[in-house]
Amino acid sequence: MIELRSFESLGKANFGWLNANHHFSFGHYRDAGRMNWGRLRVWNDDEIAPGKGFDPHPHRDMEIITYVRQGAITHKDSMGNEGRTEAGDVQVMSAGTGVTHAEYNLEPGVTTLFQIWIMPDRTGLPPSWGAKQFPKEKREAGFEVLASGRTADASSGALGINVDGAVMAATLAKGQSLTQPLAEGRAAYLVLARGAAQVNGVEARARDGIAIRAEDAITITASEDAELVMVEVADA
Image 1 (cartoon, rainbow, N blue to C red):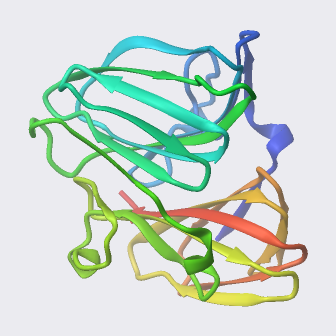
Image 2 (cartoon, rainbow, N blue to C red):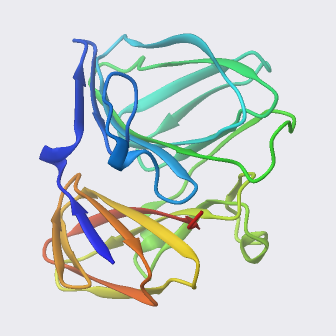
């Protein structure tokens, strides 16, 4: 099953400082048909104005992954962590028993990012935060795992999350293809950060989503130079 979710079909919310596009039901956007995809609960495509951001607010029992597409985001939380994550890099926050955090765009230009929430396999764990640089050149041979809770990825250098799943990214030159297996009982959700590509023959463009399940593998062929981000989780 391959389902295209065009950027135009996403939930919209514009607050002036924040232009948000929701792949799943979130905030003021309600859609019973887009509550989650397996363990994946939220995928927000956010544009944050310079000098603006999310004031301190709490989270609990959720794995929150931020993939910065343009600019940078500055993080501060109640655990004492502070950090700045630039375009192409990733931060993860395991909310666990509870954490309060703030995220601001302190850059001179607009920051764009994907914020991804995955439901953890175990609740009530201690909260944690981490960030890491992921040079895009390493993704040219296929998907690079950015964050994972899978045993097989323990030595890959990925950031850790408390879920049997992974967040990965790839960059493809126009005409280049890659094939990614998908095991039985797994679901995947892929978004193009830029460019265009066919996913098992379905054409997708920048910021479109592709929901995938019950496929043995997906073959992605770039129609233009493309940057891809994908989450693979249990389909439950």
